[in-house]
Amino acid sequence: MSAKTVLPAVAMTAVSMVLTLAVVVMWLGTAMPWPVALVVGLGIDGGWLATLAYERRLAAQGDHSTAVTAVGWCFGLVATGVLVAHAVTAEESASAWLAVAWLPVAAKALWLVHGLWERTALTPGALGAIRGIQQEARDEAAVARARLRAEAATEETRLTAVTQAGARVARVQAKTAQTLSRAWSTLERARDGEDTGRALTSVTTRVTPGVTPTWDLPVWGPTEPVALALDAAPALTDEALEALVDQIRHSETPALSYREMATRFRAAGHSASEVRLRAAWKRVAV
Image (cartoon, rainbow, N blue to C red; front, top):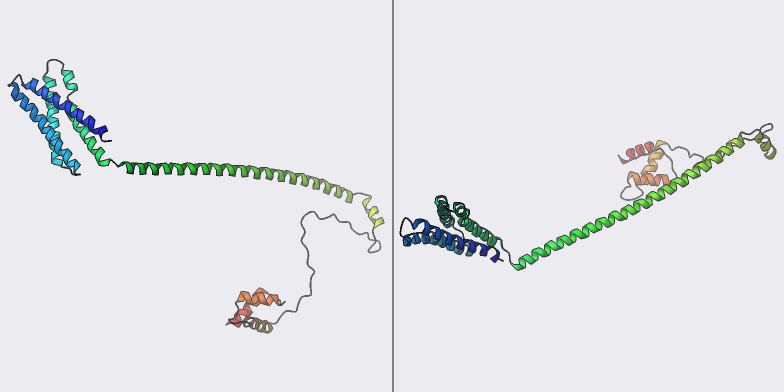
């Protein structure tokens, strides 16, 4: 995997070194013997290559030296400066030489990218685990989305059914109310008719001479059963109420609470207002 970044860096470095050496020999060869110009070019390329090799060694050991990196960048900038100076002073093809003057800096940048690649590279096992975790997360998200869509569709169906049922019930209630209203109107007209009294007189027994029993309309609506009134038990005096409360309270050990005592008091058939019963309890419990 590192070949993806190291091969472009190596190729760019080789091209930059050859270009720098050729430019130095051609440019300085006119002012000094070419062996001297060759030594100068090899010195620039050798210094750059030496610092690059030392940087790679430190990187392989997991170390880093800012001074070595600065020296390497200095050699790269010197090579770039030589190319730029040659392009500026060249009489022919100046723009072409200036277009390739950035190659040394580009080579250093590629080595920087390769170093970042190495520091962040992971083993195939770790990459496989990361892919598995990502796939599992995608699967869980897809299942959750499907579940939410299914629940939404179910809820929509339920609401539709409930709404339709409610509409049917409302229509039936309206129809029933209309029918009852017409029946009630018919009964009202029959009750207020002229011949209704004579008809009822002929078929009912007089309760009092000269009086015809009244025929009332039926009750339309819910009714509550009316309990028959029983003879009220005589009210207890305060002394009797206190004695009864004390007796029920101490019928068990420990003594009963007010709620339990009141329940047993009324279950035994005794009658007293809540205010009198609570006051008797307070006087007894003191």
